Image (tube, rainbow, N blue to C red; front, side, top):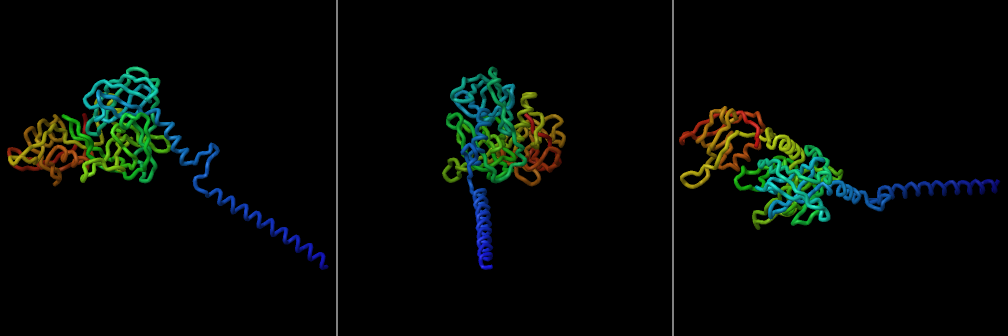
Length: 351
């Protein structure tokens, strides 16, 4: 009897050892599965592999643009050689050279169209379109704060440069670069990012790890104390705006309808007798446009909209971005020095 109990004891001991081994194996497996930065079969961590995937997919579609003595970046739109960039990159130039990388041959390009209010322009190569690789666009309306993004372009002429960051905020409204003789640039629904945006990055690509372009890097915030760039605070034109405006420029060379509200006037800043700006003088009200339909005419001074002061053209544009085409607003007008109010149904900003 005693020998049987001993055998059963050994059996129980063996079973207990097996169960302990199985539990230990399960625990080790779970720990290994949860270990951060676990390498894939290629030896790369998943996050690093994501970076490499996005860069390899998009960087061949980001080009360096030379416009006279200045350089910037651009993004290939389609297989026909169209490239979207910033209006302030092309400036007043009509002809350009485009380079995909330092090892590639420079291609000639010409201007297709410019839409200064959104700081966008489209150019097209006159040869070698088959060498260009179009990008894939993200739906910028779905951008989320915290998404990892990469800024690709040619800062300081350094072709094929990449910086990293996150989406810091969405839905920003920022004043863009001023172009001489053109209306003020106001970027609506801009994507704010911590990725470094340096001179030459303008017109390039802000890219998600999915390999889709979320926006067009355009400017960096300025530090009001030192007057220089505020590092880590950059802004990009959202992809949806870039695609919408680009398609219109390609189709007709101009923008016939945007999502931006407009009084449909040509104006200039009015200066008071005290030499201070106090409104926007209407130089011309487009026939059949929002202002003309409301009874506003040349010579009138627009001093406010719905109680918001409009002391100059930039302030007028900043007020109008609050609204959408089709909305009705009260416009405060001075005619021969006499104040009056009119109601206007806003039109769509166009070029």
